[in-house]
Amino acid sequence: MSDEKQSGFSRDSISNTLVVAIGVSLVCSVLVSAAAVVLRPLQEENKTAFKQRIVLEVAGMYEPETDIATLFGGIDAQMVELETGDYAESIDPATFDAGAAANDSKLSVAVPAEYDIAGVRRRAIYAPVYIVKDGGEIQQYILPVHGKGLWSTMRGFLAVEADGKTVRGLRFFEHAETPGLGDQIEKESWLSLWPGREIYDDQGTPQIRVVRGQVQPGPDAIYQVDGMSGATLTGNGVTNLIRYWTGPHGFGPYLARVSSEAKNDG
Image (cartoon, rainbow, N blue to C red; front, side, top):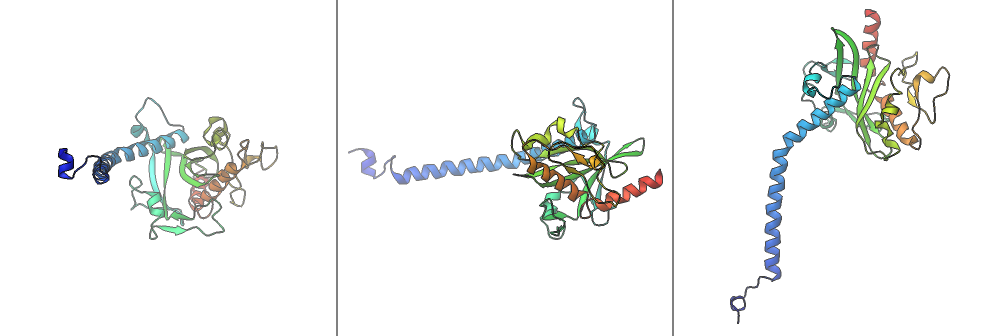
């Protein structure tokens, strides 16, 4: 009789196998958790740098050979109280987390159904804006925007001219739209159609939109951008998110204020 049989112990027993499996699982869990804790600051740093690069790209300031933080340091970041359009000097845009704020009932508001064309549901009370100047003169405003597409929440930045009503550029940094169709929102050939489009009509109502097919000549053409073949619903999502964020429940009050200031300065 073997020593294992005499002792009543078997390496192949179910109980022993379970003990080993649980032990290995615990060790792996500890290692994974430790790695996540150690890597989290680096991941957050990379995430911040990526967003800063998109801001620089939409502003036309990105230079691949130059440090992103250095370039971004030339942009004036401010916080805006969306309801009033006034600056919120007490809040630091560098540490503000719009996603976390939108989930905090004290720092966010529900979007009324009549305004929620972009499926935002709740938005933070405050939002960052990035102001690009040249020699002290404002050139453009960069606004964070997001809303529902066909399959995902699309997140990006809209650049608006100093007049507060003309599109200067558009870039998306996050989406999960259909490859080969909806992902055209990140293609330069389509994004290049946006500069010069007007956001508002004479009454200050957002009219900008992605049309189905190609823009046809006419008085409304200034508000329109060619659609994406096979991606009508994604195009509708882009229309809705831009109209929401430039509307009265988004950056509308802020853009109205800077537009008025631009006219007075002119």
